[in-house]
Picture 1 (cartoon, rainbow, N blue to C red):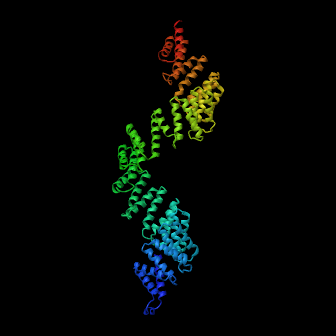
Picture 2: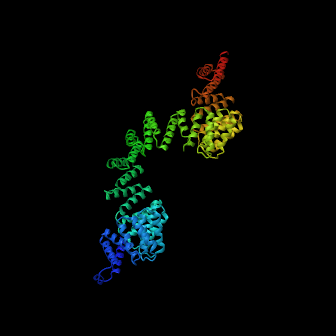
Picture 3: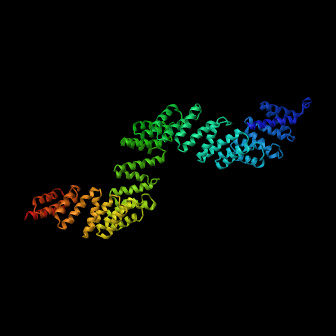
Length: 634
């Protein structure tokens, strides 16, 4: 509006300045005067075709006239009004390049800048506005120049420069409408820079004090208020502003977007019931919305979360049947696949898997479903089946995970060499892998099971040297102790098990280590120490170890000739031992031996016969057979 008023004033001054007195009308006008008079009059009255002809004839016939550049300026403005932007640019360019002393050069530069903006020449428009700001700091439209510069910088994503320009508007302008408009753009700039609290301050001010705000800005201030609250995860506040927008501007083109956002905020807040209802309403109300497919996807996802798999499948199939290759197809197929997995419909899951693999798009989703398939088979114990899918994703972002799972899978399959190969590749390519400790431990297990005990110990010690008090550190110490026990390197075995007691007092393997220390000390005839460690086991709650601990205490008492105590501990051990374990039959053997010493041959015979009838250990059976034979020959 200010720009229009200024130009009308310019025209009026030009007309009355050139024709100052009524007496001038009484004489005949010269041709140049007539062209100017008719042209300016036509311009003022809105007859732009006549004005254009008059001005064009004037500049053509009188190129050296003292007022020629004033007429060029009026011609340029006329062409702008008529939409002849390129012709207008030619006219303004002539003024800027040739009229060095043109009185209204600042206006001409601003007009040229506006033209360049409308023609999409951002850089040239920016250059012209910067020239105005530098050369004409007292220009009466300097505020408008800063405003336009701010818009250009914002459009070029020069956010800092745009912010500076918009702030200058408030500094130089007395035009409240222009100031309020610049505040809106400062709010949008803050939003773009993720300064959401600052953005809220600007938009809140405009929404609560709409005076002097140009038409159309108010509703957008309200919309961006909702957006800013959403970005700050204040879903209830965002919903409040979105609902106000929906109710206040019912026929606005943004209403479908706002309605969708209300539902999405409910979803993000975890209000699944409300979100389902709102999205269903949106789906029925805005059937042509570009947000419709995302609505069907979110409905399918929420129904999947709620366990309503059949309804979820129905919503997702709408997307998949809508058109081939739509942007929601890939992620919808992933959700559909998971629906079938939850329904235990292996055929449906496989069909969905194959459907996704056959598409020409969705490479990320194709890779992800390969990973899901691998994890599903692996989790169900079908390790060999899962390996093929892990191999398929080796050259993707899942490479680290795939290498680890392949190595672990081969270990579970008993293919130790293949396991070690893949784990070595993992540790070479990903030296800081999150699977480092577990990978090293599995490698150590592979080496131990392959009989390479020295390398196994070296690998287990690598885990320990990571200096992390983790479960793999514990497992490695336990296996180190076990390997040294197997090799009869008792001191090293004791050191490993003692570290377990020191570092993991709250883990169940603490009691396993205590049991092993008891056994080691008993083998060295350190009876007091052995009893101490067995007592630790019995103070715990790991019942699986009680049988061995009671048996071992029974052995101590047996060797000390305390047969009643020995029998008492052997019989207690029987309550905790599985009927098929070697410890069970060993305990039966010792019970038989105690009974035989006491002359209770029938009871002893009963224990020996249990071993002969049920044990699969030939050495154990042979020992029982010899004892039974010796007893019967007496």
